[in-house]
Image 1 (cartoon, rainbow, N blue to C red):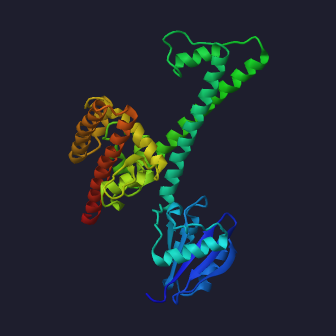
Image 2: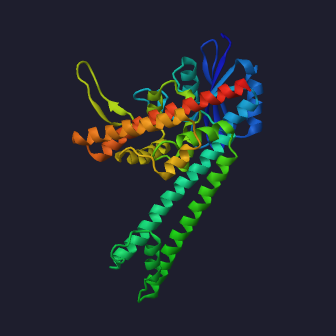
Image 3: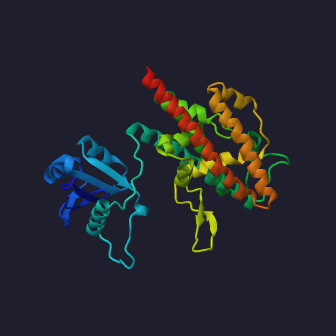
Length: 375
């Protein structure tokens, strides 16, 4: 369409800088408006017919509220990846107005990369999963503070007592000091450990409840992913909340790139060099992926817990999961036999595990869609 106007928005908590790339080639600033729903509505009316507008802004701390507001007004909007916005070498001036102009110009040229935007329900599930992840990090810090405090005081648990078991916690609570200040310190550290443990339990229960009320296609994918070894409920929910619809990736390699678990490369001419993983992807997804990959250092087997999870999935999904066990175990053994460190081998296994997750996710999505059409 020759009369399309491309709008670039530089969004902040209180303000939005607006720029427009006109059909005649002119790119100009429209000033700054408050980041309020009524101001956005007025801007859309001012810019002209809705069907001629294309709006973009960078993903950031303000989330997707603006996207949903524009969608409610039937305006086509895309949220773009900020790290993939082209930058001119030597450009040392950065302002909100210039950023909006750059977005509008790059959007018209097709140089921006949009990100996937979840709906409100999916975003709520992802917020809950990330809240649990934050609580787990807080638990690690709280435990470190307590254990290092005891270490500084020369207190050691009884022999053969594993850390953070019930026996270990009972020993910690039985420790006494001569000084009241140290007693108060110990009490505070123990209270924080107990508080974080209760917080994690509440969040995990909330995740369990959220899964039960999730849409049928989402629950089906979560159940199917748990057929894989090392993928329990929280890991499966994290995968679904971060990836969304697996079918939006045409190939498994695209999902691997999205996770940032692919090797970096610096090649030129006849020289080829591949280095460490890029990490330019979804860190939440990559973390649970590597955690699950450690399970594939063991021989293929189906224990009681995994057999119970298999009861909820069909034979095709179970076949993919069983194939994953053999393939990934062999991959881990081959890499470590060639002298690769276990951490690097597990990272490679995790990348391939993501391919099996993609296969399961796309299989279930296609079956769900086929059953919906048939109904």
